[in-house]
Length: 459
Image (tube, rainbow, N blue to C red):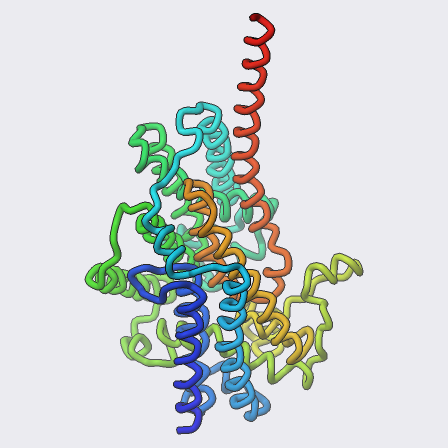
């Protein structure tokens, strides 16, 4: 009962602080901070944490703990993070004179501006990027050792779906930068921007481009049998439709979308993983439910259990800034934990990494100090990004970047800490599209200045 009481008090405080920081926790008006709260913390981390502390989880990962006391230690650490993270965000808002509720509601109701919609050079640049993006998808499929979804559909592979997925990811024969940047990262973002222009202009060229990019984004998100990417991609479209006023979120629609998503997820489990036992879908510690509430947080407890005991602290070896500075190979703690706890799965080729809440990687490097510092740093970074995007002009590029980060930051929070120090894909995506806007604006201004100067000389 003590753990349940503490859990309820912490949850209440966290709800209040997140609401103050984001302006709303309403499911009908989702934003970056509310998605972080619901997905990264409450569902993926905090519910499972309570069950683990109360020793009623019976989860296969937690059963591998060597020191049972880390059930309780992990519980208190995660409770601290649940309060400290939104507290830092709220303090950043106070320092920035940011009224989260008023400014977010104003942003939702603001009209979309369409810069350069009459400028052919913007569409041509966008078309060129789209061709590169779609060509990169074909390149990815060509260089993949197998196309898992095709192998499963044909039913002629000797490998399991899990093995096929690992093969497609780890034995890719092409340039990983082309795959990760131009195929996986760029295509969805381009499709979002094209969707806004298609909706707002009604022009056939934008509609055709959007449909091509949408099909490409769906393909690159499902070809390796990954289940979550395509769901997150479709959620980005729902959020974008809400933010540009195409749809309104209602309780009825959320329930309907939830049921459709659950049905699709169950179908994917049946087709991809061959899970036909209905008990696994109804169980709280296996199947889709177990994956939601335990799979992302259990490795955090394993990190606490292993590092400082069986494994030495990494002291920065998994952080790109330090490894680049001292010319060292980067070591991801999630991979090391997988190799330590489940060596048989790694050897069989059915397991990759044990991604988990960012504090696990921070702890693996610097212990409990790493947990505190990483929480303060990431919370401040996230809130600054949120404030900047809400205050930027609401045009297709900035809006779609906002949506992109709104979905990808919560996913990264349960993926590791290193990506928040330097994430090349985030930097490239932001730099690319902001650079395009600046380039076209500069060209227009220079052209106008030259014409003005020319007309003055003629007079």
